[in-house]
Image (cartoon, rainbow, N blue to C red):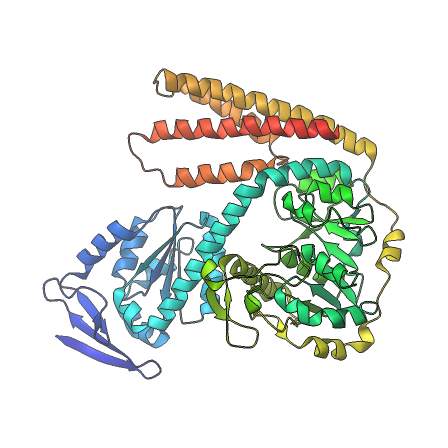
Length: 575
């Protein structure tokens, strides 16, 4: 029997409540689609949640309906699980909520969020915010009726989730691939950074406009103009874009470089750029740092290596926010140096004219559309442009940064091509130059750096730190090997863990935790620890759990011992 009908005039969604045919329950239709079973919605929800809900994951449910699935999920949740419910239509929800146990949602703010509406930007923020807490282990669930009635919004949500998962995969692969390079560079650059100036000395010191030059294909159209005005504007060069600039007779005021891979050195080994101040973190390829003989400015990264850097330079070296591109770091540096406007050029983040980079960049190549899986996104001029997931991840990182740190809207995108970057004002490069003529009083950065009293760190501080850390790494190696001996013995003898064995391993773990507090080997250990945590999260409570944990522990301690050996060879190089 039909109870009542409500119509949402904005979306033309018809809401019909019906009594179920078998159980004494209520079901609901949106337009012509049943949200729940016509017979037994509760039983249907129990079966659905049993087959689709995942503990220790960030779960997303599209549509609240009458709350059958919501209640079943919340009753199944543990403390290490989270649920985001997305209800697309406020008017529909206002009719549904009379029949929903909202108290169950309200009473569990640490486990559940209910988002009502179709603001995809806010949904994206929520997904980004919570996904990282679960190592990007996402699980999507739905009410099929909602997918039919709100098709466009459903597609947008799926695209956001796919972006998040692909970005996480890109970041994970980057970390796994580069972790050893980053760690080696970190050690070797400790010595080479002796005469570097902490970026702290330059924070909020200027008011002039800054132009950040990246190496996208659209940079070609600005090179001649940039050459004309280079003596009156302040230019930050993002990484390997340096080759395009120097080839065209343009010398930037700052080079920002972060890439730790050996291939990065190939861009600079035949280039003399000593007269350009180099802004860098300790993970930069060590050969690049050794090659550059000019002024150097060091900054820290968000991670777990700050204690060592701060101790060495006897100050809290400022952290720079970044992303998948050196341009992400360049933007935060520019925002921290000046209170004036910041302009992006060459920031395509897309394959404009089927090119990867501007002319003169050694990475530049022609891209055939069939060679890569390309994604259509909104372009600078409003139409669609083709990009890929690594570029899309960088775009998302720009937009996330701008949503937080661009309150006065002083970041402008004058790329005149590529993707549309939400939060940056689109402007032609010429209009940007014409809008701020009175502010273009270019400072002499090198003269300013020369006036800074304290440069670098003290030799005795460095020697003490190296001696202490060599002892600590040796001790870490010894403890990991001791743990391995105990573990392998129990595995060989097929023994269960005894209380004494567990106590011994706990004692070793406590000592290791203490030694690893400063995270000197953060970059080497980060990938393996994340993998171990991810695997443990997916362990079921079965009879093989103890055996699986033993094998995982062996892998962890072997990696710690192996990493320690590598670290000791790098420490010996700088001793």
